[in-house]
View (cartoon, helix red, strand yellow):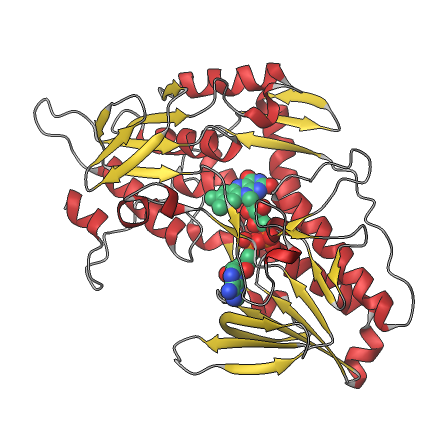
Length: 418
Ligand SMILES: Cc1cc2nc3c(=O)[nH]c(=O)nc-3n(C[C@H](O)[C@H](O)[C@H](O)COP(=O)(O)OP(=O)(O)OC[C@H]3O[C@@H](n4cnc5c(N)ncnc54)[C@H](O)[C@@H]3O)c2cc1C
């Protein structure tokens, strides 16, 4: 029996699983091949709609799909991978809720464990801020933002300040979403270390970068360029220019680092910690990687591709196809996908998008982005519900702010506003 173990429950795993299920249908049915998914989070998070969730346009549940349902041909294990042994071809994991570990062998290992925000680089960020990478973060932050935006302000109290650090596509989208939800009841500021917003677009699509800045201005977001977030405390944030801002919340989107699994060490990684992949997306004998965990080179430019969902989806699909080929005794093929574009949303009907190098703005960009995101959702029914919710949002219905949950201990963040 050949065992293919897929690590993580993100885009790479779901799309590798789909390609494996198609390419090895007969072998899986006969039991000659077994697929196993090991994931720390039992549900797949569809991050593309994070802005919509924070803005109250979509319920959080729309972004979550159980991994077991999305990977029907695999045995799905819920737990944290703690070690990979490449010589013995084993992986060790700690099942959720257990202190014991278990070990299983693999013939092929697909690493799709993604990245994490390096919260430790900014003192206090892990304790008092948000990085949106851990399971439950987005749901709790959406509840927080809804709660803050729904509070009535007494007297001449100033609206609470939400600070977003990082002016890339993710940062501008989140700042816009919080401002959209707050609508005057929240102040939103964005700090960005560089001298131009959305560096991903500033050089190749300066018009789109300017439009993104204009959208933030429309939503009342104050932007501070050339300034870093240097420390977060309970109720305030220090900036590199010496400014101390009293904050209700701090959200960091300052870049992410690949998850490091013991056993997949430095010799396999570049300086940013990404697993080095060959042109066929293999890392070494029987080990494959894609998505945010990997450094995948663009087939034309030779530059590393961006850490975003599109490349994780296409990379995952390619890894799954190659593993199926190798299991069937055929050679692996080089990754040839050239890309499609990128997009960011600033509320209903307001987006910027680059599609095959063509810049698009406004409603056209918004509709295209929505269509693209719905197309790649892992569950058709979720996609239909998301479309129905979006239509409701266009007609003026927002997701009510969830009541603050009194059944679990308050987090420090909740305690501050309660
Ligand atoms: C808030 C936010 C908004 C974003 N918005 C967009 C967007 O609009 N458009 C876009 O293209 N991209 C967006 N991205 C980026 C996109 O989500 C990532 O590029 C994509 O998720 C990478 O896919 P992946 O499969 O490599 O990793 P992920 O999707 O992150 O999946 C990693 C998986 O590995 C699991 N895992 C991690 N460590 C372990 C371990 N030790 N053991 C077991 N399991 C483990 C995790 O639980 C998770 O299931 C956004 C990201 C965030 C955080």
